[in-house]
Image (cartoon, rainbow, N blue to C red; front, top):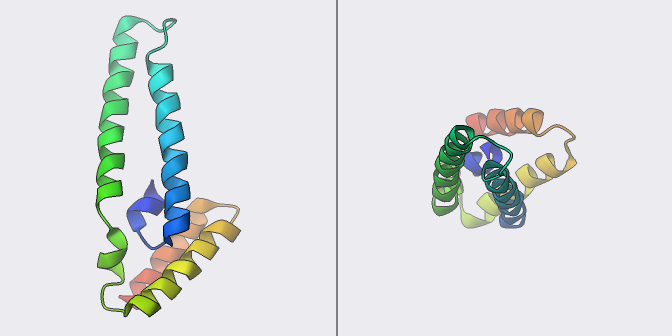
Length: 109
């Protein structure tokens, strides 16, 4: 979700990550509704899943890339988004990739 929040990736990668988050949210929801869990635990988990769902929906509605790279032409913005997407795709560690992209964005803005 941090990668989506950062907003510096291309649309294909953004859609792929949104799908991954959606699948994970469905699994969390299914787990939270599980019968083996005590009612109180289920209610707490469902509440947390609902809050997380709201956050995910807000991320999907807000196009962060326009804010981060707003001063660049659409062509340059697309190039930067493709480069950042490649960094994420080629990195074995998304946290490290995110930090690298954050540093690059700081220098660009």
